[in-house]
Length: 378
Image (cartoon, rainbow, N blue to C red):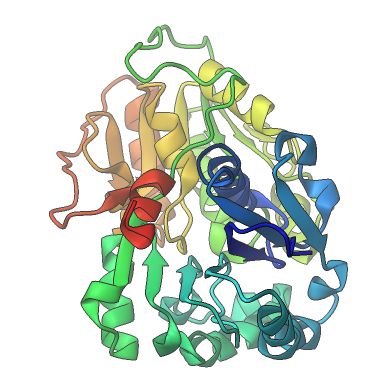
């Protein structure tokens, strides 16, 4: 609850729908910044899905409220965003209400800001999405409408990439000055993440090892990797393996992938792992694979760059911008397993042809410090 005897202005960080993957990483980094850089000048309240997902002892100056029912049904989420949070804002009278998960809630605040990271409105709808995740499929069709509600009432709309900003301006007729591009920060918390100025040894494994860290979602495109491996087998290329972070038990999509492809000896299903383990595998594997067809950033791309190793990445706008300037990347068509297999073979045989890349032309904000310096005029 807001402390009535505290004269500091209040910042509310709303994240009741963030519970896993890259979005949870974004939340943790936001809370870390708020704890270290904002809490002396502002009261901070965080609305989260479950407090257990966070090490709250690291955020001793932040007051937490959890809403575990937010993910039990979409109507629960809509009730919170468009009714309950309105009551809270009237009670608390915040200076800034920052919604970290796409929806612009019906709240009152001196400043209103929404962080939009779901690129669903720009995704080609596929029948496999309907089969594996029917609820998500239909909700994604509705997402464009949800984005639109209250979006013009925000003082700022924050997105992760330039292409996303341009798409939002076109789709919703937003003022370009109000749409801020803020590149996400990677989480550097001492868990084996290298100093980006130190180059990692380029000694290869005896068996060339690719790594794809990702949650089991249809747009993550795991089947493309499996089909590319089968093509390599047909060509007699077998001295490699691909590590993927699904087990085949998480949902219908992962069960399908496991049932169809688990017999492939080069495909290693290791299941979900910790961030620390992810970075251990960044360090020990030879190359990153990232065939996802839908992202607004793709955190493993920027995380893996610090290791200065080869990357095979979807040749889509999000990935090209995430890669930025990097001298060890090859792009492939995420709809063509043959293209991926050819690029994998080139790396395995140590004959890669890397792309020439560069940073985005448009000026962007880099991380929470630059974003809040602009928003709060500090």
